[in-house]
Image 1 (tube, rainbow, N blue to C red):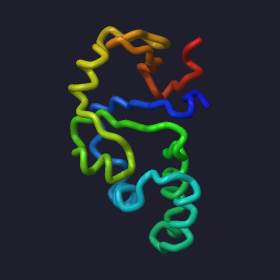
Image 2 (image 1 turned 90 degrees about the vertical axis):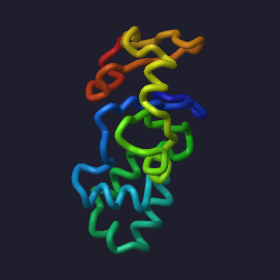
Image 3 (image 1 turned 135 degrees about the vertical axis):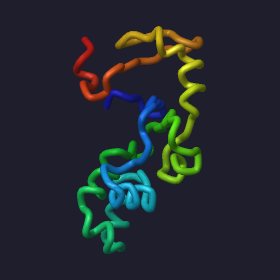
Amino acid sequence: MAIADGGELIILAPGVRRFGEDAENDRLIRKYGYVGRTQVLKLTEENSDLKRNLSVAAHLIHGSSDGRFSVTYAVRHLTKEEVTGASFGYMPLDEAEKRWNTARLTDGFNTAGGEELFYISNPALGLWAVK
């Protein structure tokens, strides 16, 4: 619940080249997208490929905001069509880096480009890494 309803999560992902850990997971993620818990459960019931890959179904549920907030991927190696096809917003990485001058951001709250944002430099550590 770290993001307010109507908020936006922007993920700067310079190295991301695919959505899944392997080719089959990537294919399924691209096919079904991050469409929310209810829709993923329905799709899993209706589609044998997703039913056989419940870890992908779980990933799609966990990766979706269920419409509470938007998720935008700022990437270099995926096209706008690939990202929006997976039900995320898209932003070119270079645009995001310029917009917020990411080289100057520090973990926690920042003001950049005239807006307040919360920056996490190492998402593997999550929100619990910042007091």
